[in-house]
Length: 363
Image 1: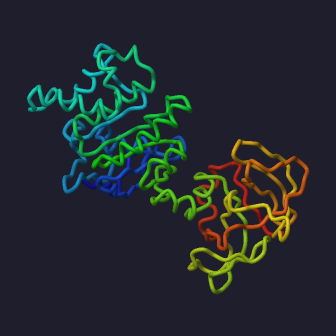
Image 2: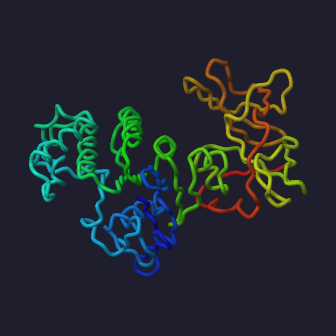
Image 3: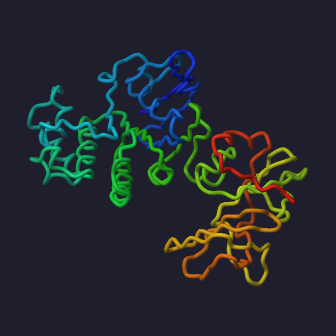
């Protein structure tokens, strides 16, 4: 079942705009991740879809059903909060089965659903334990199982992994990816973690200041960001200023003439988006050289920050099996035969929210 949000807005005290004219279709049976900086409106949007908040303007449809003014308990949703919100006096089994108590299902069928759901999340052995006896990861599994036991039409998750340590969070991400893939439920997942968004989302919605900046696959948002804010927010990027020629196929930059990956932009000032992994060592025929200012060893790779006389500050990701030291010169080449460009009118969008944002200008 699709979830359709149309011109949805939420204002507080007349002046504070938390969600501003949002139009999104969340596809049936898919996982859509909403990501953005703090205060971007992502959790407010989720609470509007859940019915925990009422919109100032706009509408929400679950399929053909208008649920804009319908209370949460009548929307057939499952909601998983960051704080788990488990009943402390109930066992894990009782928590999982709580949402089924008011159903018309016989007790034997309810017990069967609870058992199969707990088995899906690998928490059968925890059935007699209360929340105070569970670890953070176990509590999160119980909360997810409780939400899904009701067989909701829409599953809503508000930063469900944020309270977990990094190692456990990474493991649960992989488990959730597998679980979501096996479900036929429309899932809307809010997070501030961009890695989580890329891993879990069939599609990703990036928000800022209450507005949707881009809604696309994780791959397209990373490789073809719509503006500078997205280029920076969804991963590190070297933003090289240049001029797009009349054909719309080449951009003249400090690094030379670069082919454009998706011709069509209007000729004139543009910015080329070059991700750190798009650069490689080239001892024989380098495109340019960089003097290393800082190199951080991350195991499988080096994160290098350096200065190019032609292109200014450059960030590069290089294999971890090479030796790199501050002060040395690295010969580099661009590994892609084309680059994504951002049109001039999109260069400044959101830039004032990223104080460290730099665009390398041509010398």
